Image (tube, rainbow, N blue to C red; front, side, top):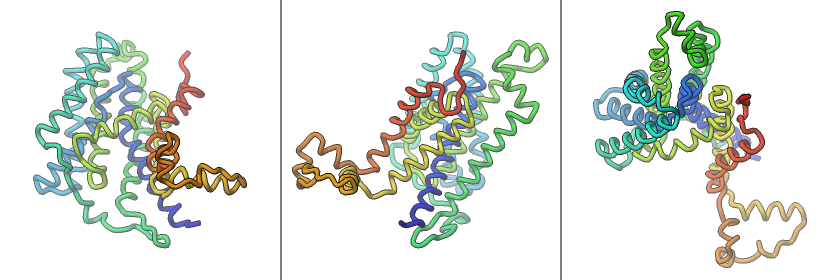
Length: 332
Protein backbone atom coordinates (compact mmCIF):
# COMPACT_ATOMS: atom_id res chain seq x y z
CA UNK A 1 0.00 0.00 0.00
CA UNK A 2 1.40 3.37 -1.06
CA UNK A 3 0.96 5.53 2.04
CA UNK A 4 2.50 8.52 0.30
CA UNK A 5 -0.13 8.37 -2.43
CA UNK A 6 -2.95 7.97 0.12
CA UNK A 7 -1.70 10.83 2.32
CA UNK A 8 -1.22 13.31 -0.52
CA UNK A 9 -4.52 12.34 -2.13
CA UNK A 10 -6.35 12.88 1.17
CA UNK A 11 -4.69 16.28 1.59
CA UNK A 12 -5.61 17.21 -1.99
CA UNK A 13 -9.17 16.14 -1.21
CA UNK A 14 -9.09 18.27 1.93
CA UNK A 15 -7.95 21.27 -0.13
CA UNK A 16 -10.69 20.67 -2.71
CA UNK A 17 -13.34 20.22 -0.04
CA UNK A 18 -12.37 23.42 1.78
CA UNK A 19 -12.33 25.26 -1.54
CA UNK A 20 -15.89 24.03 -2.14
CA UNK A 21 -16.76 25.20 1.36
CA UNK A 22 -15.40 28.68 0.69
CA UNK A 23 -17.90 29.03 -2.16
CA UNK A 24 -20.81 27.32 -0.41
CA UNK A 25 -20.26 29.29 2.83
CA UNK A 26 -21.37 32.50 1.14
CA UNK A 27 -24.50 30.87 -0.29
CA UNK A 28 -25.26 29.25 3.09
CA UNK A 29 -24.84 32.59 4.84
CA UNK A 30 -27.20 34.34 2.42
CA UNK A 31 -29.84 31.61 2.68
CA UNK A 32 -29.67 31.25 6.46
CA UNK A 33 -29.90 34.99 7.08
CA UNK A 34 -32.15 36.12 4.21
CA UNK A 35 -33.98 33.00 3.03
CA UNK A 36 -32.76 33.66 -0.53
CA UNK A 37 -31.45 30.74 -2.62
CA UNK A 38 -29.13 32.66 -4.93
CA UNK A 39 -28.77 30.86 -8.28
CA UNK A 40 -26.24 33.48 -9.38
CA UNK A 41 -23.85 32.72 -6.52
CA UNK A 42 -21.42 30.70 -8.64
CA UNK A 43 -21.42 33.56 -11.16
CA UNK A 44 -19.97 35.86 -8.50
CA UNK A 45 -17.29 33.21 -7.98
CA UNK A 46 -16.51 33.40 -11.70
CA UNK A 47 -16.46 37.20 -11.62
CA UNK A 48 -13.96 37.02 -8.77
CA UNK A 49 -11.66 34.93 -10.94
CA UNK A 50 -11.94 37.30 -13.92
CA UNK A 51 -11.47 40.42 -11.81
CA UNK A 52 -8.38 38.84 -10.23
CA UNK A 53 -7.08 38.06 -13.71
CA UNK A 54 -7.49 41.72 -14.70
CA UNK A 55 -5.77 43.02 -11.56
CA UNK A 56 -2.89 40.54 -11.50
CA UNK A 57 -2.37 39.84 -15.19
CA UNK A 58 -3.68 42.72 -17.28
CA UNK A 59 -2.82 45.55 -14.89
CA UNK A 60 0.48 43.96 -13.87
CA UNK A 61 -0.28 43.98 -10.14
CA UNK A 62 0.34 40.95 -7.95
CA UNK A 63 -1.92 38.14 -6.80
CA UNK A 64 -1.54 39.43 -3.24
CA UNK A 65 -3.16 42.72 -4.18
CA UNK A 66 -6.02 40.97 -5.97
CA UNK A 67 -6.63 38.71 -2.95
CA UNK A 68 -8.19 41.44 -0.72
CA UNK A 69 -9.25 43.98 -3.39
CA UNK A 70 -11.33 41.72 -5.64
CA UNK A 71 -13.62 40.29 -2.89
CA UNK A 72 -14.27 43.82 -1.65
CA UNK A 73 -15.17 44.96 -5.17
CA UNK A 74 -17.45 41.97 -5.85
CA UNK A 75 -18.98 42.35 -2.39
CA UNK A 76 -19.86 45.95 -3.25
CA UNK A 77 -21.45 44.77 -6.51
CA UNK A 78 -23.41 42.19 -4.54
CA UNK A 79 -24.71 44.90 -2.22
CA UNK A 80 -25.86 46.92 -5.23
CA UNK A 81 -27.63 43.84 -6.63
CA UNK A 82 -29.44 43.32 -3.32
CA UNK A 83 -30.39 46.98 -2.92
CA UNK A 84 -31.69 47.64 -6.42
CA UNK A 85 -32.63 44.12 -7.52
CA UNK A 86 -33.51 41.56 -4.88
CA UNK A 87 -35.08 44.08 -2.54
CA UNK A 88 -37.44 45.20 -5.28
CA UNK A 89 -38.62 41.67 -6.14
CA UNK A 90 -38.69 40.44 -2.52
CA UNK A 91 -42.26 41.62 -2.04
CA UNK A 92 -43.39 39.24 -4.80
CA UNK A 93 -42.14 36.17 -2.90
CA UNK A 94 -39.40 33.57 -3.18
CA UNK A 95 -40.34 32.46 -6.70
CA UNK A 96 -39.66 35.97 -8.02
CA UNK A 97 -36.33 35.99 -6.16
CA UNK A 98 -35.33 32.67 -7.71
CA UNK A 99 -36.25 33.85 -11.21
CA UNK A 100 -34.32 37.09 -10.66
CA UNK A 101 -31.11 35.32 -9.54
CA UNK A 102 -31.52 32.75 -12.32
CA UNK A 103 -31.69 35.51 -14.91
CA UNK A 104 -28.79 37.32 -13.25
CA UNK A 105 -26.62 34.21 -13.65
CA UNK A 106 -27.23 34.19 -17.41
CA UNK A 107 -26.63 37.93 -17.61
CA UNK A 108 -23.22 37.60 -15.91
CA UNK A 109 -22.26 34.67 -18.11
CA UNK A 110 -23.07 36.55 -21.30
CA UNK A 111 -21.27 39.63 -19.99
CA UNK A 112 -18.14 37.55 -19.36
CA UNK A 113 -18.31 36.08 -22.88
CA UNK A 114 -18.72 39.54 -24.39
CA UNK A 115 -15.82 41.12 -22.50
CA UNK A 116 -13.34 38.23 -22.12
CA UNK A 117 -14.28 35.82 -24.89
CA UNK A 118 -14.67 32.05 -24.65
CA UNK A 119 -11.01 31.10 -24.28
CA UNK A 120 -9.41 29.94 -21.02
CA UNK A 121 -7.42 32.56 -19.13
CA UNK A 122 -4.05 31.26 -17.87
CA UNK A 123 -2.53 32.35 -14.59
CA UNK A 124 0.47 30.93 -12.74
CA UNK A 125 0.76 30.11 -9.05
CA UNK A 126 2.30 33.05 -7.11
CA UNK A 127 6.08 32.82 -6.90
CA UNK A 128 6.02 32.65 -3.09
CA UNK A 129 3.83 29.53 -3.15
CA UNK A 130 5.44 27.64 -6.01
CA UNK A 131 6.91 24.22 -5.42
CA UNK A 132 6.07 21.41 -3.01
CA UNK A 133 5.50 21.90 0.71
CA UNK A 134 6.69 18.37 1.47
CA UNK A 135 7.33 15.05 -0.24
CA UNK A 136 6.31 11.55 0.85
CA UNK A 137 8.00 8.91 -1.29
CA UNK A 138 7.44 10.04 -4.86
CA UNK A 139 4.33 12.05 -3.98
CA UNK A 140 4.47 15.81 -3.38
CA UNK A 141 1.98 18.16 -1.76
CA UNK A 142 2.06 21.69 -3.15
CA UNK A 143 2.50 24.81 -1.04
CA UNK A 144 -0.43 26.48 -2.81
CA UNK A 145 -2.77 23.66 -1.76
CA UNK A 146 -1.70 24.23 1.84
CA UNK A 147 -2.40 27.95 1.39
CA UNK A 148 -5.93 27.16 0.18
CA UNK A 149 -6.50 24.99 3.26
CA UNK A 150 -5.29 27.69 5.66
CA UNK A 151 -7.44 30.43 4.07
CA UNK A 152 -10.58 28.27 4.03
CA UNK A 153 -10.20 27.15 7.65
CA UNK A 154 -9.58 30.76 8.71
CA UNK A 155 -12.76 31.89 6.95
CA UNK A 156 -14.81 29.16 8.67
CA UNK A 157 -13.46 30.05 12.12
CA UNK A 158 -14.01 33.75 11.48
CA UNK A 159 -17.61 33.27 10.31
CA UNK A 160 -18.43 30.92 13.17
CA UNK A 161 -17.09 33.32 15.79
CA UNK A 162 -18.76 36.31 14.14
CA UNK A 163 -22.20 34.68 14.03
CA UNK A 164 -22.15 32.97 17.43
CA UNK A 165 -19.91 35.02 19.70
CA UNK A 166 -20.44 38.66 18.74
CA UNK A 167 -23.23 41.19 19.14
CA UNK A 168 -23.24 41.79 15.39
CA UNK A 169 -23.87 38.09 14.77
CA UNK A 170 -26.79 38.05 17.20
CA UNK A 171 -28.32 41.09 15.53
CA UNK A 172 -27.94 39.50 12.09
CA UNK A 173 -29.61 36.26 13.19
CA UNK A 174 -32.38 38.09 15.03
CA UNK A 175 -33.06 40.24 11.96
CA UNK A 176 -34.10 37.16 9.99
CA UNK A 177 -36.55 35.68 12.48
CA UNK A 178 -37.81 38.93 14.09
CA UNK A 179 -37.13 41.78 11.64
CA UNK A 180 -39.78 44.11 13.05
CA UNK A 181 -38.49 43.72 16.61
CA UNK A 182 -34.93 44.36 15.51
CA UNK A 183 -36.10 47.40 13.54
CA UNK A 184 -37.99 48.75 16.57
CA UNK A 185 -34.77 48.48 18.58
CA UNK A 186 -33.20 50.99 16.21
CA UNK A 187 -31.32 48.69 13.82
CA UNK A 188 -31.50 49.17 10.05
CA UNK A 189 -32.73 45.73 8.92
CA UNK A 190 -32.54 46.41 5.14
CA UNK A 191 -28.93 47.55 5.62
CA UNK A 192 -28.17 44.35 7.55
CA UNK A 193 -29.57 42.19 4.74
CA UNK A 194 -27.64 44.19 2.14
CA UNK A 195 -24.43 43.71 4.12
CA UNK A 196 -25.07 39.97 4.50
CA UNK A 197 -25.60 39.59 0.76
CA UNK A 198 -22.44 41.57 0.11
CA UNK A 199 -20.39 39.38 2.46
CA UNK A 200 -21.79 36.23 0.83
CA UNK A 201 -20.85 37.37 -2.67
CA UNK A 202 -17.42 38.52 -1.40
CA UNK A 203 -16.76 35.00 -0.08
CA UNK A 204 -17.64 33.56 -3.50
CA UNK A 205 -15.27 36.06 -5.13
CA UNK A 206 -12.50 35.15 -2.67
CA UNK A 207 -12.87 31.53 -3.71
CA UNK A 208 -12.64 32.65 -7.34
CA UNK A 209 -9.40 34.50 -6.66
CA UNK A 210 -7.88 31.51 -4.87
CA UNK A 211 -9.01 29.11 -7.61
CA UNK A 212 -7.48 31.26 -10.37
CA UNK A 213 -4.00 29.64 -10.36
CA UNK A 214 -5.34 26.08 -10.08
CA UNK A 215 -8.57 25.97 -12.10
CA UNK A 216 -9.48 26.69 -15.72
CA UNK A 217 -11.01 30.17 -15.83
CA UNK A 218 -13.60 30.34 -18.60
CA UNK A 219 -17.24 31.43 -19.07
CA UNK A 220 -18.41 27.93 -18.16
CA UNK A 221 -16.75 28.03 -14.73
CA UNK A 222 -19.97 29.02 -12.95
CA UNK A 223 -22.05 26.35 -14.71
CA UNK A 224 -19.43 23.74 -13.82
CA UNK A 225 -19.20 24.63 -10.13
CA UNK A 226 -22.77 25.76 -9.43
CA UNK A 227 -24.43 22.31 -9.31
CA UNK A 228 -21.78 20.98 -6.89
CA UNK A 229 -22.32 23.93 -4.54
CA UNK A 230 -26.09 23.37 -4.47
CA UNK A 231 -25.49 19.68 -3.79
CA UNK A 232 -23.29 20.67 -0.83
CA UNK A 233 -25.77 23.01 0.81
CA UNK A 234 -28.61 20.49 0.35
CA UNK A 235 -26.49 17.66 1.79
CA UNK A 236 -25.27 19.76 4.71
CA UNK A 237 -28.69 21.18 5.48
CA UNK A 238 -30.05 24.43 4.07
CA UNK A 239 -28.68 27.29 6.12
CA UNK A 240 -26.25 25.17 8.17
CA UNK A 241 -22.66 26.47 8.03
CA UNK A 242 -21.33 23.42 9.89
CA UNK A 243 -23.29 21.15 7.57
CA UNK A 244 -21.83 22.89 4.52
CA UNK A 245 -18.34 22.26 5.90
CA UNK A 246 -19.00 18.55 6.51
CA UNK A 247 -20.64 18.04 3.11
CA UNK A 248 -17.81 19.90 1.35
CA UNK A 249 -15.22 17.70 3.02
CA UNK A 250 -17.07 14.49 2.11
CA UNK A 251 -17.47 15.46 -1.54
CA UNK A 252 -13.98 16.93 -1.84
CA UNK A 253 -12.15 13.91 -0.39
CA UNK A 254 -14.21 11.23 -2.13
CA UNK A 255 -14.21 12.84 -5.58
CA UNK A 256 -10.45 13.38 -5.32
CA UNK A 257 -9.96 9.73 -4.40
CA UNK A 258 -12.07 8.71 -7.40
CA UNK A 259 -10.10 11.01 -9.70
CA UNK A 260 -6.70 9.87 -8.45
CA UNK A 261 -7.32 6.12 -8.59
CA UNK A 262 -6.39 4.61 -11.97
CA UNK A 263 -9.13 2.00 -11.96
CA UNK A 264 -12.23 1.17 -13.93
CA UNK A 265 -15.37 -0.70 -12.99
CA UNK A 266 -14.33 -3.92 -14.72
CA UNK A 267 -11.05 -4.00 -12.77
CA UNK A 268 -12.93 -3.63 -9.50
CA UNK A 269 -15.42 -6.33 -10.49
CA UNK A 270 -12.57 -8.68 -11.40
CA UNK A 271 -10.95 -8.13 -8.01
CA UNK A 272 -14.24 -8.81 -6.21
CA UNK A 273 -14.99 -11.97 -8.18
CA UNK A 274 -11.45 -13.31 -7.60
CA UNK A 275 -11.73 -12.61 -3.87
CA UNK A 276 -15.09 -14.40 -3.70
CA UNK A 277 -13.95 -17.27 -5.91
CA UNK A 278 -16.59 -16.54 -8.56
CA UNK A 279 -15.93 -17.35 -12.21
CA UNK A 280 -17.92 -14.74 -14.16
CA UNK A 281 -17.60 -15.58 -17.84
CA UNK A 282 -18.65 -12.09 -18.93
CA UNK A 283 -15.47 -10.55 -17.52
CA UNK A 284 -13.28 -12.90 -19.58
CA UNK A 285 -14.57 -11.58 -22.89
CA UNK A 286 -12.35 -9.28 -25.00
CA UNK A 287 -12.82 -5.54 -24.56
CA UNK A 288 -14.30 -5.05 -28.04
CA UNK A 289 -17.02 -7.62 -27.24
CA UNK A 290 -17.84 -5.95 -23.92
CA UNK A 291 -18.32 -2.60 -25.63
CA UNK A 292 -21.00 -4.15 -27.88
CA UNK A 293 -23.10 -4.96 -24.83
CA UNK A 294 -25.24 -2.36 -23.09
CA UNK A 295 -23.71 -3.36 -19.76
CA UNK A 296 -20.29 -3.12 -21.37
CA UNK A 297 -20.39 0.68 -21.49
CA UNK A 298 -21.03 0.68 -17.77
CA UNK A 299 -18.37 -1.78 -16.64
CA UNK A 300 -15.73 -0.14 -18.83
CA UNK A 301 -16.21 3.22 -17.06
CA UNK A 302 -13.27 4.62 -15.12
CA UNK A 303 -13.57 5.58 -11.46
CA UNK A 304 -13.10 9.22 -12.54
CA UNK A 305 -16.24 9.00 -14.69
CA UNK A 306 -18.18 7.32 -11.90
CA UNK A 307 -16.85 9.88 -9.41
CA UNK A 308 -18.53 12.73 -11.28
CA UNK A 309 -21.90 11.08 -10.58
CA UNK A 310 -21.15 10.38 -6.93
CA UNK A 311 -22.11 13.77 -5.38
CA UNK A 312 -25.55 13.66 -7.00
CA UNK A 313 -26.14 10.05 -5.96
CA UNK A 314 -25.13 10.92 -2.41
CA UNK A 315 -27.49 13.91 -2.39
CA UNK A 316 -30.42 11.74 -3.51
CA UNK A 317 -29.70 9.19 -0.79
CA UNK A 318 -29.49 11.88 1.89
CA UNK A 319 -32.77 13.44 0.71
CA UNK A 320 -34.42 10.02 0.99
CA UNK A 321 -33.12 9.06 4.43
CA UNK A 322 -32.47 12.48 6.03
CA UNK A 323 -34.34 15.20 4.11
CA UNK A 324 -33.16 17.99 6.42
CA UNK A 325 -29.51 17.30 5.54
CA UNK A 326 -26.56 16.09 7.58
CA UNK A 327 -26.65 18.86 10.20
CA UNK A 328 -29.87 20.59 9.20
CA UNK A 329 -32.87 20.87 11.48
CA UNK A 330 -36.29 19.59 10.50
CA UNK A 331 -38.85 22.36 10.45
CA UNK A 332 -41.98 21.78 12.49
